Length: 103
Image 1: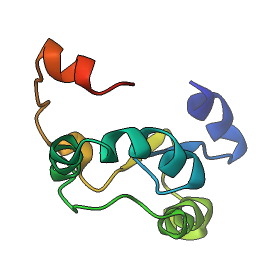
Image 2: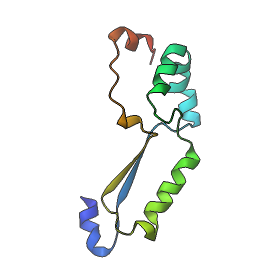
Image 3: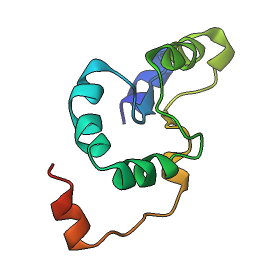
């Protein structure tokens, strides 16, 4: 990996995998489609344990931490930053529900 290749030079390589971030693209795209179906919108948000979308300002501190000396021993690390979304079991939905999403 790049982290292994660059470690001897003192270069750390880490990644952040943000979840759903409340942004104009999100609001105009998927959210608008989900919001048109109130039941689906509630179901969707209920799969995020913190019950909200991330905000752009939520991301800065994690990037700053990884870039700082406080994370000097971190390399090859991925931080999943998604309000707990990936901790939940996958909710299976029916073909009919998928078709009704109008994605």
